[in-house]
View: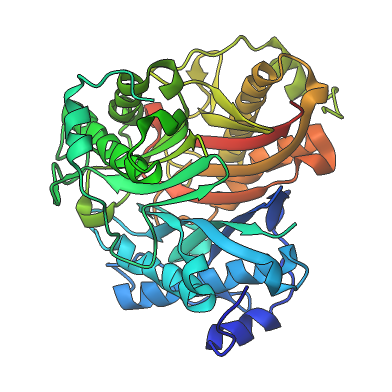
Length: 155
Length: 155
Length: 155
């Protein structure tokens, strides 16, 4: 379910076209009630909103904004998984957030909060999830953030 | 089930207070028999036991000790998930271990063994799990280790 | 199911001996229909086929070849999980690919395509999976690639 359709991200999610991954994989895979979503970077309209490392090239605030973009993209895929019927989305189970960064950068969680906040803004309590946030050495296209997710849906 | 209540970690686990994550996420999320636990760093009593990279700032032995602390914290969360009833814990399914390190450091598995050893010390064969160990560029608060887990519990 | 037994990787997979992890973990763990496979590096006959970072020490093409080796090893473990009966393998659910690399390297997906391509070569459409590809700072033994997987099997 989407509780907050007034969120500006929701309009962008609704407008997204289905994604075609650049390889032998798929945007999501469903097993029973669980949907495993492929990692999404902070790409909007085919272009990364930021590149490079948080703490070096990009501020934590901009990284946070990038994580929100990743989450929008995950919702775009989730929409495909439920055939456009948001009532079939039950809850968010887990997010793993990867932040392009280098030690001793320690604010990865503040970056990934961008994804966590958006899912809760859109879904309320059902959006709360288990999570890990780690800093990684490199991301696709030198993206700043990548987030993957598991959601539970009505079958 | 906890088979070995004499392990010194067990007393610390039993004494842990419920955690409040610093964001819009939760320490664990249950789906059927599976419990997804959020990543835990080597934090004890609110303070990291080590910071920095294994192989640079921290020895492999100290990294191993840090991974045990992560695992203690995961058990602290698991205790919440089963309402304090350890008999409801059935088995450990998977651990992912993230070691703050930099190439060509190759001993991540020896570090994450700290987490794997503790779960088997506490649970015996039921504690054996699938696992990945990777070296990451940065961790929350410049922690040395982060471990996330999936356990199976009695519903 | 394995649809393509003529693939040269298949002969190597069939010839693999059961693996013994170097720690208190197991090569795979099954829960219901799902099999969680421990991360496998690009090791063949006990020796890494490449070491070091893609983009620095190793070309993207060689990294791709390394990712195929990881996938062969995952199939070797999967064979154990289904007791050698390939008909019990139903589909690949998810891969997570870790590429030893450093920013601004952005071609991790092209590397992990080695794993994705092999699973689809061997299994066809059932091999398509959700996926994340991230660049990490260090891997076991300074391996170039590590891949972990979730498969669905007939119980």
